[in-house]
Amino acid sequence: MMRMVDLIRKKRDGQALTTEEIEFLIRGYAKGEIPDYQVSAWAMAVYFNGMTDRETADLTMAMVRSGEQVDLASIRGKKVDKHSTGGVGDKTTLVVGPLVAAAGVPVAKLSGRGLGHTGGTIDKLESIAGFSTSLTREAFVRQVNEIGIAVTGQTADLTPADKQLYALRDVTATVDSIPLIASSIMSKKIAGGADAIVLDVKTGHGAFMKKEEDAIRLAKAMVSIGTQVGRETVAVISDMNQPLGFAVGNALEVKEAIDTLRGEGPADLTELSLTLGAQMVLLAEVVSTYAEARALLASKLADGSALEKFRAFIRAQHGDADVVDHPERLPQAKHRIEVSAPTDGTVSALQAEEIGLAAMKLGAGRSTKEDRIDHAVGIVLHKKIGDALQKGTPLATLHANDLSRIEDVKAQVLAAYEISEETVVAPKLVRHIVDRNGIINI
Image 1 (cartoon, helix red, strand yellow):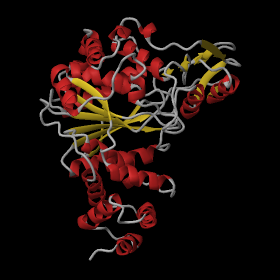
Image 2: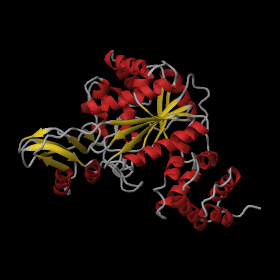
Image 3: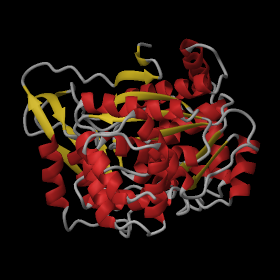
Image 4: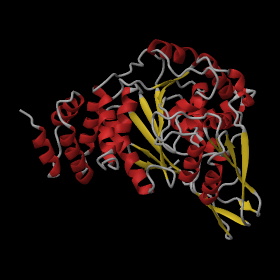
């Protein structure tokens, strides 16, 4: 008979658990048969001793089996999901979804809400009047087959063991474990029914993985899981030392996504969207080379079909599709407050996390899951790393409804900017691409 204490001892001593032992652990924990204190001891042993690739894949699939698994078999074509590890101003799903759908790739996406300084796709979409993110499974599948794209909120029935384990890790200082992070992310993607997965792994000040070498380790771990369980997986490692694009805040980011689909968006958001989208098109086997995939997506931006797909997507989910042509119909903040450069020079750093936290103080994000957010508020940046400044140049505009903390927010935004007398080059946006063969060049 298996005993949890033996599994803890085995992992404490650096040994690998069997597939059956991991299944016993996760099933027992999900059913309440194994107590928190024993799983805490196991998680700490994993933190110090790690897991093999096979163990990590087994853990992932055990968490997948702990709850509902979405069956997307009735959706025509190869379903490729995209996931970001979270960043500031990261509205790529709003661009990539309609873009790859316009290229013939079905987009059936389960998304979440934002927590902390990173935003959630569901919150951004709900800043569009009437937009519904609650779809029945039948309506979800039907919409993807009819227009090529649907986005709905994650259900509580998806990977319940992962939710339990994450809550425990959060209070036992075992969050920062690559195998546990990788299995947590991949379990949700696999349970969501994807045939293949593209991951956007952020690195830098505003990312969970501050160090690039840790981002590479996480990317490799997730690609390994996908490969072992039969889901082709590619990871793009991208920079989060400064916010992506210029807009930070829900409605502001929707407007910037619309601009990008119109071909008028920020260069970095456009570049990352094309890179991630091209990997999705490749995995969906629509084309055979990366260059062909990029060219196909560029043509969908240029001819307006990506923008039209976004319009159809909004309409299908009961949102106000007129925001595509009239973004002023999105929620608008009462006040706009400018933050100006205190001196001449060049922007040498822009702390993404501080900008995200400042937007939270305005009401754009949550510190707990129960918090209500204000879709209208946020920050629009005017200058980023490498941009030249003169004293008094606008650095950012704060969009606010509540002015009670505005001086604090202004100070935080100003402190996020570092200004140098030297010429500065902006950080490279796309750092690496990782597939089953390791790091590849594009």
